[in-house]
Length: 531
Image (tube, rainbow, N blue to C red):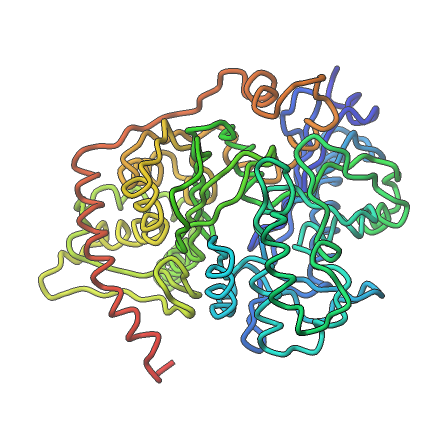
């Protein structure tokens, strides 16, 4: 079937993912290959001490990315997009969006980037004997209770970003298990919220006298392949402002960006791991068994199918690096040179590979915001060196690439060295890997494990949620998500693989020693009254 016919007959699947700086829409055909895409640039805001996006931004961005994708369909194939085989919505995990009975958002959306729930996180971890990161929805809810916030008594529903968008498109208050596990701990046997912990939380807050029960205000837990409702008439108009898109399109469970990253890199089986590196960085490893004890540096989540995953998530990755690259762009333009940003990134990244394996004694921290793995509620981007450091462009760029992985590596050290978790290979995806062979080699050295990058890695989570929509639509009876991906989507494609180099492994380890010892400098910058 040619692509045009597939579009006209709805033999397609659409995935839309809300990333930190871009909302992307990817349309795939019956062979699961991307055939059209669209995007919309957006940026979070820091308002009244909260990292947030407005509801207006959310809908403007969703509609903008869809319109851009539909325009791509029109330009390439000469047809209007009126129907789709299945749709999936994905977004940045975690966060807090509380709604009242009238469906009104009662406080601004508190995103994953906020480190403002430290007290709640610590108390819940002690209560549950289970790590509750500050980003998790339950930590935000309990912190709001501890703060005595007025809105809490009126909560009717708590959503993450993709759960909210899916609800408005379908009327269904559901969420994929991968991000449900980022709202409240889930049970691997029942594939639902942990009942013992639900009961402990209810007992904890009973004196407050709220009219709601926890399970009633959380989304229903769904796993990959389950029916998550259909696009309503109202939802179709919300998504496609042109009015062409028909209602009734089936939608898969909405899922977080960690889950879609696993799907997009074919890393949903045990002993596989993937690293997503963009505005934030996180490594996820599908476990063979439970960890021996809770670790506050690690999130316990799941694959979209419900298999246990350990995640080392750092809030900061490329924002500071991008800032330095833009500084070089400004310099070049001041010198009268015309700058192609793609070429500039590639040139500077490749220059980094000429640097010393340990970065020549340079050190930086890319902490635009707080970093829970290393214990910071706030961050300050920072670059430091000693008079003896080898201050070259190559070492400077290598330092900024290394530090993108520094906090994440701190969490991985716990998994590898304390929990003795085994990983056969990692798969890399995200903006950091766009320059072939650079960040991929640095990551292989950092984790001392082979790292593969798929040719499709650039499609990212929007493609991943499109594949989850296609899986729901096309799966055969008894076909697992892992089998669907292995046999029908990737069909033996292992991507390009780079192995760790001994000198790189040793150099990154020396850098990490300096990174950990220098955290006191970052602490002083945060506590200084200058900023």
